[in-house]
Image 1 (spheres, one colour):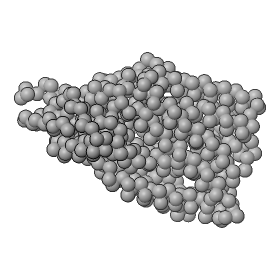
Image 2 (tube, rainbow, N blue to C red):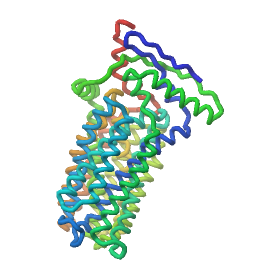
Image 3 (spheres, rainbow, N blue to C red):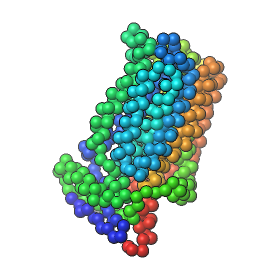
Image 4 (cartoon, rainbow, N blue to C red):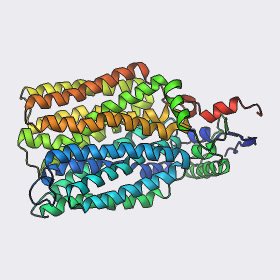
Length: 492
């Protein structure tokens, strides 16, 4: 096994931790990371889908809430997304300051408490408040978890693993859709009880994930950047021992070392300067990808059930079956296409998935407007569109996580998620709900076309601005600010 390769001189640290992590073969330890961190996306998928599936039931008499269908799919959805944007910014900053592990435990706890209180809603304002706070916790998860995943997973696997983990959102969506079918069955549960049980299940799953997540370590990259070099070295050495025992082979020596100047924190001014002045093209890319996917996905996931009810006379009690099919198609996209982001490359895959999904959505809108679709064929069209869109949307999180310096990683994820999602994710449900609730086909066609145009536009930006990050160390894609400081340190 390799040595630690540590030397410290007047605040400057030289370490091989990044190279040691990147040259690891896939192991049981990596599976523990994937399960411990990735499962929260299942909860997010469950949350979003449940609200879309139960929208019609919540607005019915006897639900226990005085609320309209448009308020559930529009206002409540927008508040959930607004909470996620706020939580991403708030917890993103704390993640860079206090570490990945502390924050991905805290954010999950926030989610659990808010979801439990949502299940106890007795009025519309209570429901709206705790939908916002549920989103607040989930938004914090995005920054903390994407940072940890990309910093712990070897570079040659990073693209596919990140995509599949983000795509696991749709496994939660499948569960939420099927759960809603059972929960909304009035022969089993009273109208005021079934929807509450769907939220209660989210709490149970969250508690299980919390138990697993306690065993996920802090990011060694974050540790050495913040002066806790010995902890980082010991953690990586322990992982190396496990991998060598598992494979029965000695690991090769790491090739490169990196020198950094220990810095406890980076101010907002330096973060903004780094993102927008040092990497302006990457900033445009991140915003474009997030706005496009946020509008499309938040509009569709919150409003798909209402479209089926309004335009195809599908009973609200069975819309979950349709959405489960669409959701499963979404998961298959990152699952089957994820490997190509590491082999064929980031630029062709990001641009290709965005543009192709937008073109297919335009085709779907045309067929819908021409009256050539049924509930079944409409669902089939969405499956095809979202197979590609899902891989593209997941790549947005991967992109902003890996193309900016490590000290700004969580905050960069938080910023681009918050701004892009605020622009597309809040406006999407409101515009989509307003257009589709009218029952006018041309209005719905317009809603679909807006989403398609934004996806195509984002894909065209990726053609010119996407970064060839496949197989490269995070430190090679964007040099850490602390490493730049070490290069100019006169004491070295």
